Image 1 (cartoon, rainbow, N blue to C red):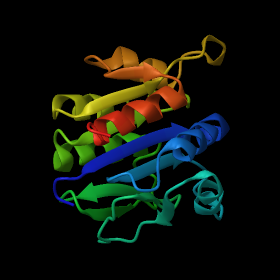
Image 2: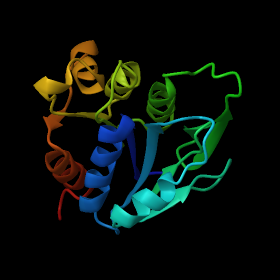
Image 3: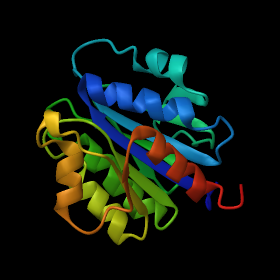
Length: 193
């Protein structure tokens, strides 16, 4: 897995959840990549995110365990108050945050870890959400030689995560609909397929 692809996806809110579901419904179950997902959601409520995503995903969906070896063809999430990051390209690193120090920066936290560990075999994807989480992390992935993607902004949503990511720093490799982003991911991971 050391030479495999790492795909990091960040979103927020109900629209972001729907975007993640749409993306996972298109990505093939045998994709030779680890998918890491952060969705902003309430910290103090039980989460059924893994169940929700599993119903719409072709690939397996799992809640990552601290130090867990990551398996290609699997989409991983963290618990709401424990942030998912990457350690040494093949292991999950969970960061507890009882004081909420990372607040609305959990996507940047994941993306920065992916940039640090994954290099040029990484893909960062910013989907729907408000504010600007993901912008700095997407820039880090770009500067590490990875590919960057953002959902095509919807004018009626206002200025949110995709718009901020696109405007922040450096070119975004692909801007498109969820299905266009999924197709671009598959083309990168399977260049001969």
